[in-house]
Image (cartoon, rainbow, N blue to C red; front, side):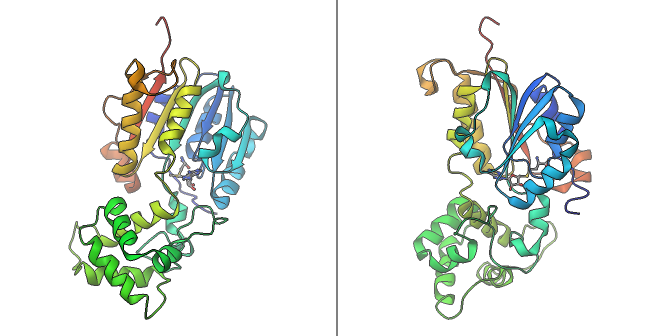
Length: 307
Ligand SMILES: C[S@@+](CC[C@H](N)C(=O)[O-])C[C@H]1O[C@@H](n2cnc3c(N)ncnc32)[C@H](O)[C@@H]1O
């Protein structure tokens, strides 16, 4: 069974910020193994759920885990950015959640190619229906585009050198496994393992994953769309796992919390910030679940007029 010991990140904090005990509709844009959604449905018998995941395996597992609540759920094998295509009774929506990034089972499966610490194909597609995978990026992108990707999405210092080395190696042999790429990174970065030091391949793999899955594209539009549609008192909570995503969330929330035309949203769209600073996992949670360490949770509530 996949992800049997799955622990949802910042669970109590999310339920609290969504005020998930209210009757109504909750939208989970990133179901994963349905850790958060299951708790909402379990604790609140008057909650209904609309869920999305673009990973077929995640969706199947979420469906299995949510089967006790089958009459209260509607699940879609789709990108949450396609939310506009789904008919939703927004007046009934009480909370929307995004828990961005990957599920632990995706990371742990070498066949998915997300992890640099296990050998596997350079795949990294969350939605395996899509054509572009990591091997194709490494094989086809021109050198300057590779450098830009490693710099912007991985914040890697020797981005240009790594791109140059990849461009020269791929003329000799096809780079198609995670181990091959990791070896090139180790060589370029002159990696010597040291306790407490993060492997440079982590940055490179992060960059590739963001590129393959277009993780930053459309996030801002999604957040603005949801803020525009939420009814008064409706809440939106987002967990980000890297600073690039968190920055987008922070800016959209801050902008939407400011009244007036500079908000740049629909005229009525305005929210109250529920988290002045991002909520992070407690020491107890990070000790239990190391994946929770980089998590940053931010939330807003659609402004209640006259309140
Ligand atoms: C961190 S996991 C979610 C974990 C979930 N909250 C839980 O507790 O089980 C993120 C999930 O979101 C999915 N995902 C990431 N980006 C997505 C997107 N743009 N649209 C739909 N699903 C996405 C991934 O496939 C993955 O299953």
